[in-house]
Image (cartoon, rainbow, N blue to C red; front, top):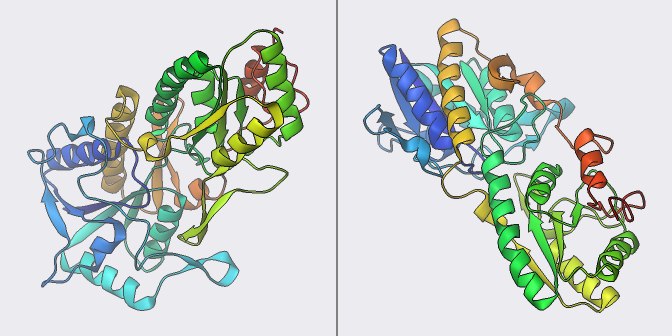
Amino acid sequence: MNVGILNSGGDAPGLNAVIEGAVAAATARGWTVYGFYDGFEGLLSTPEDERWKILTTENCHNIRSTGGTILGTTNKGHFTVKSGVDGRVEIAKEVLDQSKATVERLGLSALIVVGGDGSQTIGLELRHIGLPIVGVPKTIDNDLGATDYTFGFWTAVGVVSQNLDRLRTTADSHQRIMVVEVMGRHAGWIALYGGLAGGADLILIPEIEFTMEDVVKKIELLKALGQREIIVVVSEGARIGGQLITLNEETKGEVRLGGIAAFLSTKLQTLTDIETRYCVLGHTQRGGSPIPFDRVLGVRCGAKAIELIEKGEFGHTVALSRTDIVSMPIEEAVKKLHLVGEDSQLVDAAKEIGVSFGDTHSAYGGPF
């Protein structure tokens, strides 16, 4: 049996682990794995311009420990989705036809799509034209409702935590406010877990509306108690008065978030008269070696994808449920975002230990 695999969308620590897991499991069955370069663009191969390579246990040996992806990935190109009839995405017919021709020419019995909700939606479009698709969910944002955690998330949280440790010492030395912007788009999981692990004083996330007044109240309280440094973690998708801060750019039809840390830094220095600096962690959260949890999760997801192919469960994606890797229809996996609940135990615990979310209920919360 011949199977294909591709990575699409943003990179995430653990992508290579998925590839290694899938290749090892497929090779054990005597199958051949074709790895497509640069996401779905690799499906536009021709005999004169092949965009794939054969993956073996030899050329994938222990790549689970490395970041990025040996196959490359992209969130641009011919497969950029647009809304069609009834919200269904539309991809140019000639692009779909060429993709199907590539799969048939190579004799692929299945194609593993490793990507987020947008990539899985593209995978569904390929499924609709008859291609045997199996999905593996991928996003550092941890915002897919189908799975408890996505690989790459915990590595990103570790990056945030480690950087807060470093920023705290310099902020303490100069008695500064430090505003740290993290990724996550419209979900606050990276900010919440990273902020808690790194001892942030304020955590501002998309799911909880905050005001500058309440943020300033918390800072003034901490300074009155003699705290030298103030650490504010803000998710790129947090809103000020319901307004998103964007870079006025679009990617895959979505606005590119960013700039909220710079905005907050200027505001806070004006309102508090305390020297304020900001730091955007950006793609450091995506890069580097994945932590052991993400390596193991990635390998398990890759191996499970091969198992689904063996069982003929096409149109399904793998997912982590408690301690097990399970499968579910891709439609179910992408229809609901996994967001932080405002009344969740995690948020309550953060408030109990004195973390403010910039809202009235937590401005004076905690042990103070």
